[in-house]
Image (cartoon, rainbow, N blue to C red; front, side, top):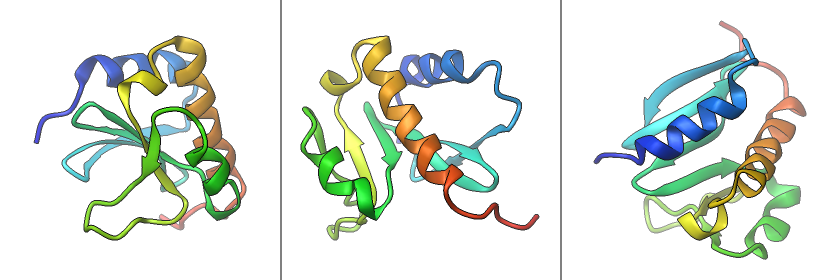
Length: 111
């Protein structure tokens, strides 16, 4: 499955000065990782964001957000954001920051 390259480039632009971010192909798309944890990514034309369990309901209340459900079962703490929810740089930045905030609150994975 292809993913929205333009959305991936927009995310790269937001993260260009952050040397702690890696990219990895997963979920049929592209994931952005920090300290071994995915914090956001792109699959098809959706943004994926890891917000954590505590921020999950609030994230779902935002426009164009829905549960991330690859297997038919929602992954609590992860959301998909449709193109309308990250159309502006301000919106996209907000979502990316939510993912970074969450992975910054958990221990880094050991290499």
